[in-house]
Length: 166
Image (spheres, helix red, strand yellow):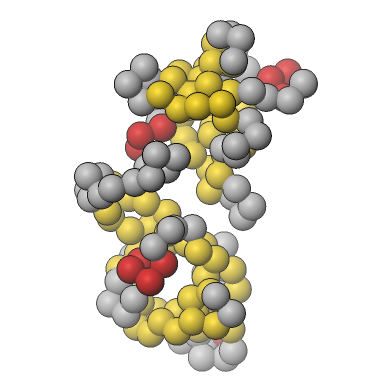
């Protein structure tokens, strides 16, 4: 089993501890259901109720009561354990598939190695460790990723001018 980020708590809703969640999965009805237990950086959260409003799940969690407790969860990433054999589309990857891959430009220049995947509010970014400098976040978007070859162990990037000099 691997941990996969399926959502991020955006904000509290109301005064009873309910939160609005930003979906980060292609199967939200399966991932957001009562009884689901989410891993978070500060411990597990078990969903008590799930309802949908304007295309977003709104959840309550066991032990989270009141607006202040819900507010404390703002920005929290929710992860679930999934079977790595679960079928993915050809352009989808688990974080664990990408970590450790070599990053090269379309011209064949080695950039570094993927050490993490950052799940930002707008898009995911590959965190690339480079020799002798700070890690470089590269947005994992079609405009910058030319391809991922798991068999070859590479991510081919086509960055805009100046990105690699940051």
